[in-house]
Image 1 (tube, rainbow, N blue to C red):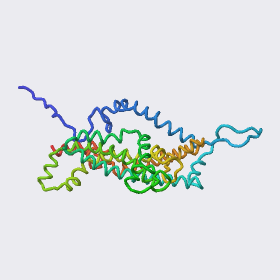
Image 2: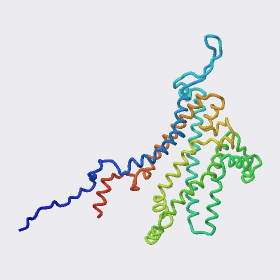
Image 3: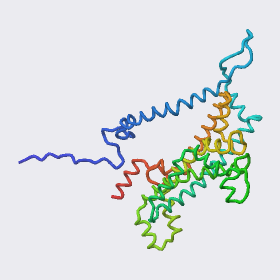
Image 4: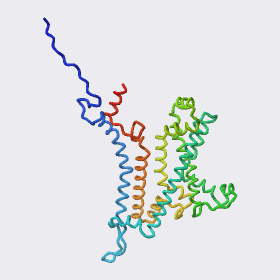
Length: 337
């Protein structure tokens, strides 16, 4: 009589459990991913990290002044600690810094807001099936392709006393002199140049939206306004967040456009970058480095806050702004199955 031997049934690990030959919490290919990313991190450390550290080190030193004990002129640098940072917020230098800080913030908020609205409008127009759509897209790209200095010289010619701007307005406005009109000139020139950048990024996001979504909305009775608010804007939000973030980082470092269009030492348009450049151009490298470090911290804080508040979709994969753990995702897949 044959003897039957009980064979153990194959057991399956519960959903979300780590494989037996893999450490919990370690993703497959982690070492390979780190190895592939390491060249990029090395380049970033050399291109971005080293200049930041060098600027911070320079901000802690100042030029030696006066005579030494032997009666000779002192040369070289001396350690001054945080004296340059304290001087940024005090006296005449503090007034100039806060003016540049206010100008930088106002120009950034105004230009980015206008560029976002105009960019979305341009993308919606270019996305429609019209004749010459390819020509329109190529024409929109021209302002963005023009170098900023050339664009500033072009608008300087438009805003001169006998230029096209005054001819259209029928008034004689001194656009490139110090005053609020100079701020308006910088805003107009920057918006004209960089709104196409936002428009092209948004257009790429619009092309990824399936047409069936709009057909279903039309069947349900949704109008054009409801489709824009309920469908288009939510679906292009990740692309729009990236575009606005890029423009924020670029506008906070604005230098060449107001410097060429209006000129240096103009109180109405002087930015933090122009202030740091002016200090370095006058061989005051310590204060100039301090201004540059403060600007770097300002840009980093704005980028961090922006990503934390509005860029949750960039950090999560479910599109809801919440990070989904692998265990939760596996359990959800099992429940759906």
